[in-house]
Image (cartoon, rainbow, N blue to C red; front, side):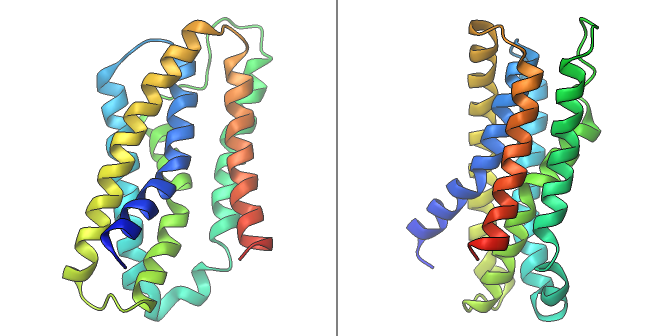
Length: 190
């Protein structure tokens, strides 16, 4: 793979992180650099580590992973999205879905990085045979996801301040749509 192909791959992998970060920023409605950087760190970390795990496991476990990865991602995103939608209809002024909680961030990071696991498997099949050959791509993928996630959070805050609509409802719908997209891509377009 060329360096340009790796950067394009990194950007495409980061799009789910970007969308989830926008949603989280919309819910937060204020700039909180610490939270944005924690979220971006975990998104970047999981986007970088998952291809490494996929690459490492390709020879032993690929037949087990590829049959279920899309269902896992869909399940996690649908669960979180459904929870957000449910909470958008509660009469409480306070949103219970808190994108600043570490367990929520880690769950979202895992859900949005399942595709990166499959990419790691494909790295093993395109001739990346050593750790040094995969090191540059995983650093680029992690860095790109970090930057794009931070940008998404800022865009979300801007949108959350401008448009005061049931953001938890829309955020939940976005998470479910991402899950459905992952499912459709794996079931019908692979």
